[in-house]
Structure formats: C-alpha cells, structure tokens
Image (cartoon, rainbow, N blue to C red; front, side, top):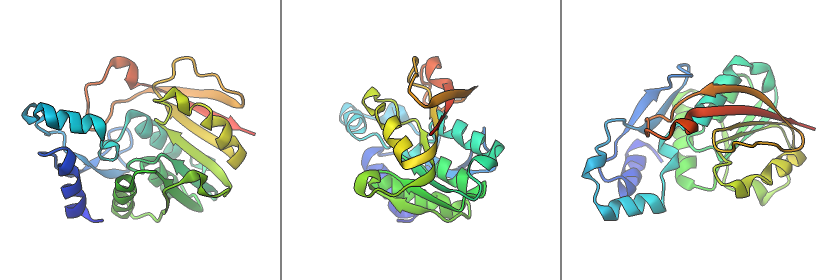
Length: 217
C-alpha cells in the first residue's frame, strides 16, 4: 500500500487528514509518514468524532514512548547490533526502523492492524531499511534476541504479556508513559525522558513522562 492508498484509508476515519513526511524531534535521524499537524480538528462533526473513537488510527502518530525508545536504541546500538529483533505493536514501526539502522541482523515489525503494517512498510522504505512483517505474535513460537515494546501498556490487561515476552527473548526493552507503579519480575528501570506525541495531541502532562525498562532472563 503506497501513499495514495494510505491517504485514502486515513480519510475514511479522519476526513480532512493529510499524511506528511516528518522528521522526529527526539530522533532526527528518522523520518515517518504521519498525520500532518495542521489537521483541522474543529471541522469534525459528532459522527466523525465517534468513528475516530471506535477506530483510532494509531499508525499515523509517533507516540511519545515510541520516540523515546527510538532515541534509546540509536544511543545504545549494542542492545540490538547483530541480533534478531521484534517490535511488538509496532504502529508506525519507529522502534523497528531504529533497530534496523542500529545494526540489527533482522527486524520484524508486528501489529494486528493491517494499516499499521502498510505504513510500516512505507516508513521502512523511506528510511532505507529492510524489515520483515507479522500480524500475529502468537501464531508461532519463534524466539528473538530482543523484543521491543513501546506504548503497549496503555491497557493494564496487557501487563501479563511482559512475562510472555521473556519466554520468547533474552532481552525485552519497554518504553511506557501509562503505568505509574511499574513492577514486574525480571524488569528494571533504565531511564526517564520527556517527549510528546507527533503530531502533538496536547495530552495530559503525565503522558509525556516516558520511562524505559529492561527485562532480561
């Protein structure tokens, strides 16, 4: 799916939405196709707002946690260099692309949303990296050296996945701004960094506080 098709897909949910190629403030080494910041939110009617609520187009944003994770990987390439990596719930594939640029031997971008996989392919091409793609992490028992998990814990029901990840990889890198009492066996805190979603959603200040954790077995 190329830009015109993705643009048409976006406008099914955001009628006046426009994708544009944007360099990331925290990781200017990377460029992604994202919702243009000039999006006229005031033109939405109540039916369109409800449609957006029912199907958030996660893939057209670079969420704060994804941007922080990309920065961390670029600054610490030894984490992924020469390793087999999977980006779980990849969205725009920002973390997967950072890992590929940092020298991972292979990177899988994984997301249930077919639109996310389509934009991930476009973003990989834009950044001149090669990724593999998966729509179902649980469809096989493949193991990895590193699993990347950015902004997946917005639903606390996903917390048990942290244990599952450590059965499939020796190392798990987590970036999250939602869980305030993060405590899970095998994981430790690495760093804290502020960031905003691109384009900026004017979210609550608390959601700009991103923590990075490392899980190991």
